Length: 115
Image (cartoon, rainbow, N blue to C red):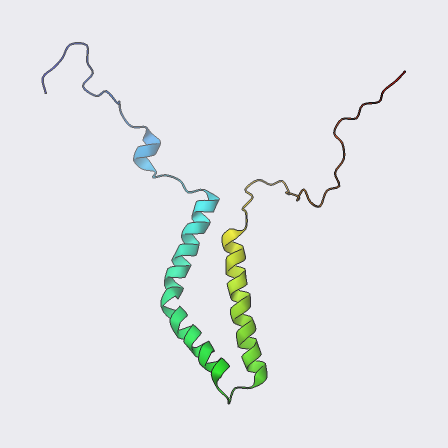
């Protein structure tokens, strides 16, 4: 590339030091998601075996009724917990968030007519 008068040879400039040394820092939410995905990857091969075994326990006549119920409750509870974890809102602030449904509705401003 030939030198052109008035034009910089490095138009974007040097990258900032933080970009050179540290890759993007993860937020708490991103870190939590990354850890959750790693755990799921480790457990994925075992899911099929575990569910087949629980299915066999539920269908087996020699299994006691209490054991069957425990297996069913375990499956349902685990599924519900996973869905709750997946869809629950994450609050990163230290403030406690209250549902608006719990608060009684009160007027913010009230006007009084005087004669």
